Image 1: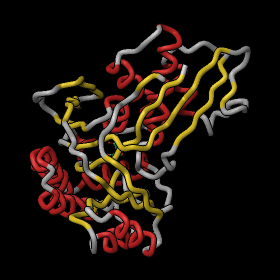
Image 2: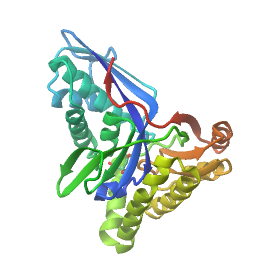
Image 3: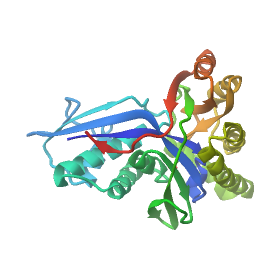
Length: 307
Ligand code: MEV
């Protein structure tokens, strides 16, 4: 049984989504493939599994009720700890392959829920954005209220996230990976400390939510000028929240010579930026000259699937 799931970019609203504010995420053209074959022992990529190294796959197997003896192979084009959803895609692809092995198929909603449980128990993941995007693909609008195009809703504590489908146009983004690994859990905890004691930080979180909602129409219309402006506004808010990094600022400044807009994507503190551009080659070169590793990705594409 082979399943694959895409990586993601958060276009607008990271960190604010943890507090129930709106966010927009989209699948990207980088994927993780997971293959499961029944066997007498459990092996992952030819090795006896290790709790630390294989924690997403092991948790996904446990929560989806997989048989004990499996030969598992994983392959991914998504760089780890880059903010591009590598852990969400491996969790979601493993859950889907395991459910399909057991029951002959899967419901996307069940995969999204279990995928979130996996990430939540492994890293205390704060919102189901990444795992729902890896499951559904295309574009996702997360909101605290129900709108048209509802896919599913996921609750934890007193927050409920309503996941909606949105159509993303055929846009090209350049991702700039800083090479600085960062922990999502640590960045989320850092922002939480700020939000808990500062009403200014809470205002910034709400402003990010407004920016996300304002971005829905320009995204659907492919209005790059407006999207670029909103990306820069969103980036300023993220910097105020303390999730910037000099390597990210350098890449954003370099990318802006050829782009409509650029911003941190994902948890920040390292990881990646995204730039919206008509000139991917020039933008890639500018990011690389600024010390980053650049990838051109297409937005959208299919969510989790069996092969
Ligand atoms: C990380 O991709 C996005 C954050 O908003 C955390 C989360 O939503 O779980 C920083």
